Image 1 (cartoon, rainbow, N blue to C red):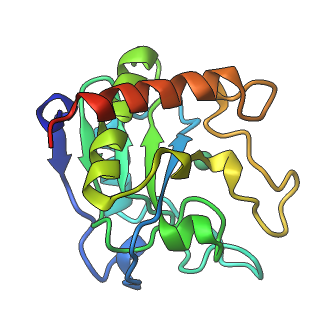
Image 2 (cartoon, protein in one colour; image 1 turned 90 degrees about the horizontal axis):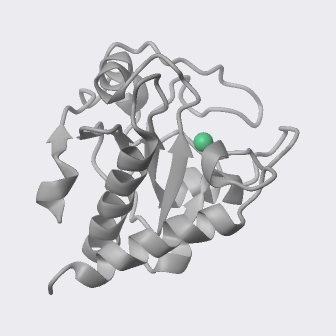
Length: 188
Ligand SMILES: [Zn+2]
């Protein structure tokens, strides 16, 4: 399964940008996002994270370190890992449990990128991460799941193409079905 994911590692250097503060994590959830960036694929997101290009203002209830960071970015051809799954990211809900307890995965939406290939690769990586970290399917959640304090609406329509009317419905259940299918196909 991992071979089909085509997982590559291109870590943000420890101590810099999104990893400038290293906060340990025991992952209990997996949070699925989509980038809403229509020009950049996985490699370009990886470069942007390594160059400190993805800033986010520190505010009262906001980002804790001034940079965005998450664990994996996926497009039609590759999954790229940016930070260890034993460190907290900044992708979900500021100081909330989404950031403190979850592995963040971003799906690319750049023009020309095949959405179903991206979603299938994401489902496979999610299954691998569930097994490795003993995370149950009910703890695989959309970004929507984590309310953001001080934001309106608190629950973001993300990943928007797997939401129905801005919230989880049949498309999200369909995605979980794919995750479950790949999980059951893995041996051992
Ligand atoms: Zn999101």
